[in-house]
Image 1 (cartoon, rainbow, N blue to C red):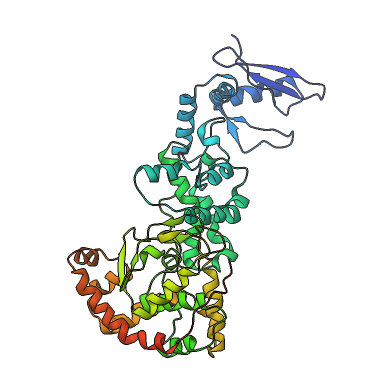
Image 2: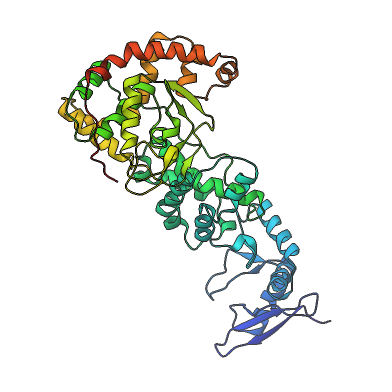
Length: 440
């Protein structure tokens, strides 16, 4: 009877055994740890009968890991047989289902794309397939958002994941970010943005067959309890506008934000054609990445202004050295078809705050004017629909629904009355001849 193995001795004096597979092939050689053939035969037969072939023998003790002839054959088949991609995926699926592996990537498959290349391309506004999809579906996405996410990827994720493939990234990799103490010191909103800079691309990859790993569900983000923003009182606002400003154009931009509650980008995007007889037509916003675009809510609105503010805006626009007609920017920059950098407005605002005696000017931002406007207008107008008609807020579903039924002129008249009562006396008290000392 043919034995299911063959035994031979090596120059060390130790007997080795090879097992015959069902297909006629042989296993790799395994040491029996025996120096006589009889002991080696007994050991080999014991392994065959019990189906427990040690993975390794060092001559003194047996390994605690065992295998069988069938498993040896299976391993040999994995090493030598040809498999289709579908068969490989089936093997990976079984191993994942049995919790032997968490992820695996087939070489030269879509999942094998380097994660750093994928992420950088994903957040490249001009090249991103995600951006193209958003545009095709008439969804808004701005260059500034993509630029922010791309910078977060470069700063936080690529150093952590470089060299890995898209398909190898798991939920555990995403959660590693919460173990970084330096990141946990950041604001919750910033941390969540960092997480999204990875999970948004991986979610897109999952639904586009670039990975089989769901890395986006079940990730608990940080609670975003808003920190109360520092804003000025009306008395402090009066003091800051009564002081001497270093830049009259910046002062006018701040006065406009104070009186109307307009966003910084909306003021930067203001053009001559947007200045009416008694109101401003807020149609655009300006971003250094996107240029002139629609407002944040993609909707135009109007806000009334007094003659003093209208005349100051028109005089400011008249100083524009570029002949651009009605499309001229009111707060023009040093190059055609581009407004000044709005960061200058905050710089001069904080200098005026310091000169007026404010204790912590660096805690006040330009957007604080909008908060002040909404807060104080709310003191005198209880109807949120009226306030939202002026502020452009569209965040509450029911208020959005009701705002469709407001008579716009009535809403503007109410706002005008409150604006004149709250804000106009302060601006009129700050009587100044406007001139330009602009900085790009």
